Image 1 (tube, rainbow, N blue to C red):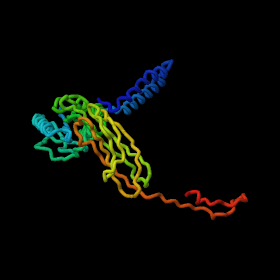
Image 2 (cartoon, helix red, strand yellow):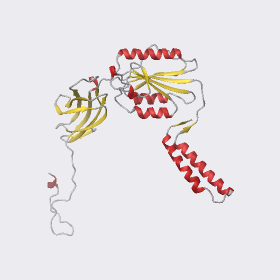
Image 3 (cartoon, rainbow, N blue to C red):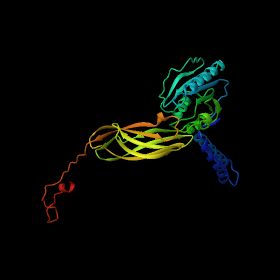
Image 4 (cartoon, rainbow, N blue to C red):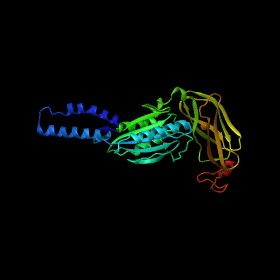
Length: 334
């Protein structure tokens, strides 16, 4: 028995008042039957809203191994993760099935769910620049059919840079799936936030997203939105914005703290039209575990000055109902 949206079960608190208010003062068969139908329909509605489901017990187990293959994990850790999965595949029961996912900024299926899964190495190449644990968990969730017992095992350092893994992790557990995190140097924990052993929990700052308007006009002031993410401890530094030619447009002292932060900067478009690239970089003034994720680019198209078509009667024409001539309306626009 599982509930994918258990918060809706709070509606069941309304059942006792419904029974109390609806119970007939004089017991009559028709009134009791009517009340029973209403309570039954209300109960079924609450169960439907809460995502209630019954699952048949099965001795077979389906497991998805999710391997962090981002640059934040050293090669030694990736080799240990691969050996961990290989050993688990050898020890599984003959009727159990397993799948393998590797992820960085994106998540890729290395092996689909199957009874026979030989894993000699990792052939898939996810983008290693960032770590999107939420996308990896979502993909693993879709690979597990409901007929067997289900488990997801994530091998990671827990240093995700994009996404919100806590929300999808709650959905997975509420669906009756056993979710486990095996964190570098590969000790098992229940939550990815606990994946920070002292020897591997250094402070890290990252720029995870840069958003610009699709197009702006020459000389126009426009917003540049930057998403920052910190791990473990605050990192002090300078936040800079430059053009592709290296011209400095903005610089400010900034501290990236653990968690996600959204920052909006105000810039002025160039005086000549064209496609322009803007580079946002965080330059730390103290130890930063992975400085390679401190820079991102965004693009926008700078358009020429907007054109305006004015349609107006001729200058000097008499305004209907008045004796004064019409003024020169076009001159007021310059």
